[in-house]
Image 1 (tube, rainbow, N blue to C red):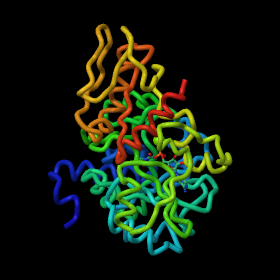
Image 2 (image 1 turned 90 degrees about the vertical axis):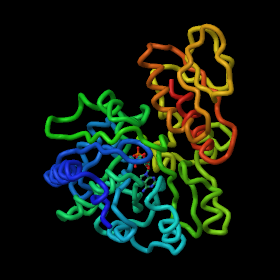
Image 3 (image 1 turned 60 degrees about the horizontal axis):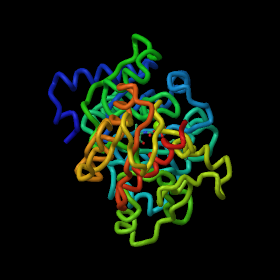
Length: 338
Ligand code: TXA
Ligand code: MG
């Protein structure tokens, strides 16, 4: 059954309108299960150029193309390896982006001139219904980075989108409010151009999940803050760093200085698991009960630090594997940010 059947007629109408808006070259911000995306028709170079200007993002940073189902991945990519099809089968719709050899449809304005393209099927009813509505009127896919200014914290609510980029959007652009994103950190990016999958950015689809699904070892490569340390500069050439802009050392950063694993002092913000106490005079910003909740609230808690005018925020990083790896990755970069 098509995704739009799950949604009320009213929402389906809104999404048909939003799809038509994309088709005439406007931008539509939409919710996904990870973070909000700043969407444009992935075949329209002028519309995609506006994504870059709204974000203030360098032109050589590639964009992810979102499609409604894995059947559409062949529009954007070719020579797709068997293991990538297995990953798509196992984890789409879901918080996973596959980097594949691009097809002729995929232009340089999507890939930043690279020969590969990132493709994702998001796991969100509104996003899927929007994608279907867009495809029903001839659209091929929606290019969408996270809907924040370059280097800043990704938005996980519509209000955060307005705060981030509202002033840069035109009146004909649109923001679809789909509530709070369930996952809260960006998708796992997996390079599928080699003999085996290689994780470029950790996310909710973890290396262990991929290894269990595929029965093989997964390479953990660039920017591996898998131990909680940013080490992009070690052994990675600058081309490769640009391939995943979120892998730059300073990214995902609020205005407040992010400090990791220090004891907070009065006046500082504090984000930590619920079982850690708040020292006197410290501003508790979030108390997640699990690593999943930690990921979901992290970006809004960092925004909260800025909203309260805090100069510093101390975060006690989760120590586990699973999504904790992605949390440590983003925090290490946020801590490096300013
Ligand atoms: O969860 C997500 O992935 C969200 C939602 C909106 O789907 N999108 C997102 O997009 O995080 P963005 O542009 O903020 O981050 C995507 C990352 C960038 O760092 C980009 O460099 C990388 O994906 N990327 C895109 N295409 C690539 C490619 N062909 N090769 C390597 N990296 C690529
Ligand atoms: Mg981003």
